[in-house]
Length: 297
Image (cartoon, rainbow, N blue to C red):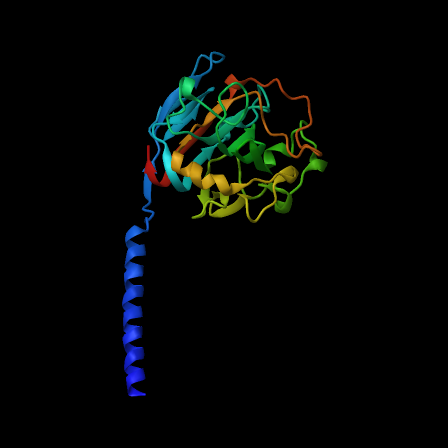
C-alpha cells in the first residue's frame, strides 16, 4: 500500500506540474483586451449647397447645419460610446414644424476614413455599401429610430417623444409602447427640448448592443438585441459584428433630409402630408462624444 501511495503521489505531482505548464502556456498566448477611452474629434466631410452653411466643429462637439462630419480616427473593438444629444433646434417654430428632417448619429465600418469618395454606408443610395449602425435617426424631434445594418440585413426599433402628441402630422391611435415589438415611449422620461445623454454598449462577444437614454437621472432602454423585439419583426445575425470590429468603425453623424422614420410599417405614426419643412431652418448639436475601445486607427 505504501508503494502504491508513493506512486500515486508521484503521478499526481507530475500531473500537477503538467497542468501548471498548460495554464502558463494559455496565459502567455491569451490576448488580453486592453481598453482605452478616447475623446472623439471630427473632420468636415459633406456639406450642403442648400443652406450656404456647414456643420461647426469644435473638438468633440458638432453644431449641425446641413452636412456630415467624420471622426478623425476609427475605432477597433468598441465596448462603449457615450454622447450628449441636443435636439432643441428641431423643435417646432413659428416658421415650420420641422418634420421630415433627420438628425443622424451613426457609424460605418471601414478600414480607412470614410470621407469624400471613400464614404460608404448601408443606404444603397449611390455610396458603396458597408455595414452601418444608427444610434439615432430622427423625424424632427418626434421619432427616433435605432438600427443595426450588417451584411445587407437590418434590425431596428422606434421611439417617440411627447413632441408629436400635439402634431396633426401624426396619428395618436397608432402609437405603441411595447419593447417586445421594438417600440418605446419617451413621454415623461426624455424631454427632447433640452439635452439628454446617450450610452451605447456592446457586450464582450458582440452578440448584443444596447442603447440607453438618460436625462436628470432617469433612464430608458430604447434598443437591445437580446432582450427587446425588433420593430416590424426585424431580426439580425450578430455573428459578423465581432470580425467587423477588428476592421474599424468611424463615427459619421449628419443632418439631412430625404429619409426620416415614420414608425411601424403597418401602423405608421407619421401619417400626414408633412414633407415640406426646410432643412436650413433647423439643426441639432452633438457633444461630449467618447469611445471606449481597444485601439484607434
